[in-house]
Amino acid sequence: MRKIKPSKIICVGLNYKDHAAEMKMPIPAEPVLFMKPPTTVIYNNDNIVYPKMTGNLHYEAELAIVIKGKAKNVAEEDVEKYILGYTCANDVTARDLQSKDGQWTRAKSFDTFCPIGPEIISPKDLDVNNLSIKAFLNDELKQSSNTSQMIFKPSYLVSFISRIMTLLPDDVIITGTPPGIGPMRAGDKVEIEIEGIGKLTNKVVSGEY
Ligand code: MG
Image (cartoon, rainbow, N blue to C red; front, side, top):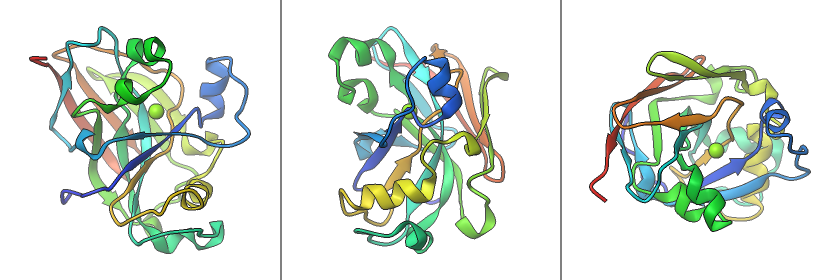
């Protein structure tokens, strides 16, 4: 896929019913949002760099929405024309820093913490509300769910976020992770696979810093 130039990456926390049950967390009444900087983006077969600042680096399999056109205050029924397509994402997270800091910016924002790919698939070619989503660590299945488990659907999320901030072409929304999140180590291979999109593969390497 071509390199994208997002102005921002908007992320949704706790958006799978089965993951909320796993975490013993109540179903949120509104989407919980946070952001990653554009410098986190890498692509298929690029390396995830394990920073020295963390001792607990996690994978999170997520469906990513890539925005096509400038979108502000878009109604849910009109969102499709603003969507370039869907791809796989890994919301790489320094879990220890997430709890230590009490907010998520550092834990989510290291360079290489947003692998996306392998291709962007048009909304016309996918039933985005019914796709299997999986994560494999060294070929072992770790996460397995379906986008039907989402609390807030992609169309709702685009509309909701567009009522907060203007979405620009190439902006990315990552839509939350299903159950089964866990740690990665240097040398590991991590793969995110979504039905109809393909498989995003990245290796973890030790960082110098
Ligand atoms: Mg996430």
